[in-house]
Length: 181
Image 1: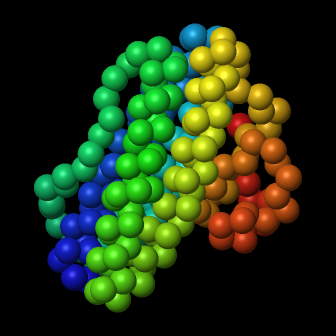
Image 2: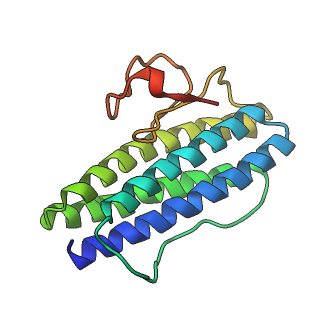
């Protein structure tokens, strides 16, 4: 694997791993703040970030050894509204800056495994940003997110709060595989 793509995959792995843990922490805060559906959304998105980290890790299967990993991370333990804004900012960074750059490099270097992992991640992150925005709008009005069901596609990290999909719109996985929160 080309060194630049490998470095980008490690960075993406690090960022997704941090988001996985950060969203778990923010889920507990949302629960304490009285927003159980926002907490469920954070937990589902935490698991989605684990899916992305796993895809990146597996794309690096032939890269063995110890590496320094540079990755961005959002920090803060504030109100649920502030935490949602941090989540929105992180997801939009991935969608608007990080993944487009990583995709361009992987395309140039013809790194198919990296491209597959990045493409699933960027499309799922767009959905995550939309859902966090919807949740923030509700929280800022003093309400919880309206979501009877929250479903995660364990293949690509897509999240649904309607449950209307029969298959994942990103990867075509069957709804039966989805995990419910």
